[in-house]
Image 1 (cartoon, rainbow, N blue to C red):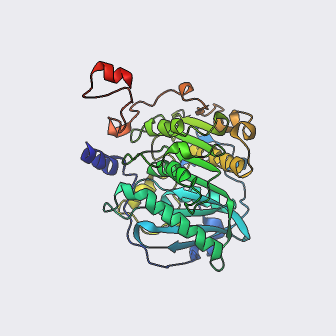
Image 2 (cartoon, rainbow, N blue to C red):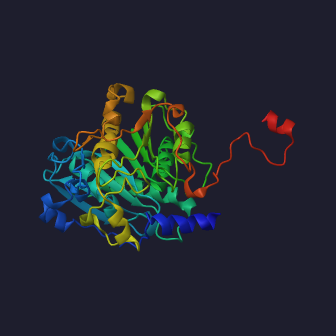
Image 3 (cartoon, rainbow, N blue to C red):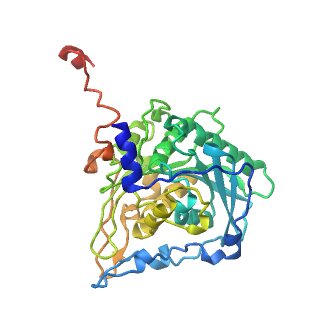
Length: 401
């Protein structure tokens, strides 16, 4: 079963590439970005512009979500480290702030090229945040059991570089957030649990956004119950995500028992094929290509980038919800307080004929959200069997459990 799962993940959805080795200590400013500050995928996507014969296309309130000018016109990038503990740092510039909040962006399994998420990274950085992009794997030789340790080491090192390195925007260690997609969503939850230990060397994040999280290999530690109660947690899943389903997302949401309902939301994105191009809530929906952030890594890079179209799900959904969650966490607010109107998380805009884009289902209780078909994705059988199932025991023993 494990071998079958590996082949399906790579060959069918191809949402993950492979990472070549990084150059040790290779620190560089992205000259192209510096020379062309206005050329970085300013969210004006061909996917939104194309129309079907009826003229229906998703118009997600362009003045607010597409046409707005960002506070910072340029991005400076640095590439540091070697192999599966390498990472990139993206800093806002023009104007360059003295200090800035930090977002750790955790890629999906083998999606090691930041260009795959480049539009989202661009949005975050030019909105005034430092982004750390750990490459927690190198190739198939990097065991899934090593992902967490690699990511934690990269984050710790990156924060040290930002805090002490010459010319860097200084990190606001009291304003750290985690965003992760797929395997990175799972890692985001684990890292939040690790950071609860004061000896971890990582500040405890104020907010965690796990987008379509998937678990490559199960592990018992760290315990998600260790994530502090003050942390904001948002888990997003897609109704047509056949790769990971919603099982791991539900586990993360349920196992973070210290976090009160006022601090957490579970969100099910639903597809809308009313116009063209359709908005499909599938596993690659959170990716959004920005080739100016292309590092050359990934043997499936071209295919991955071709899947990274930007649309209403991004501007009005993933990005906007993450922004509100981060802002609330950084200001010490609960989600109940910061998002008093449920429509703030649900509204994705309108099609050009006036029909509302199908909103996601948002809840603080898993019972209020319908299950995704193929809830375990291509894994078919969940890694963790329910506690009530027990093999090799008689009924009395099972009942006693």
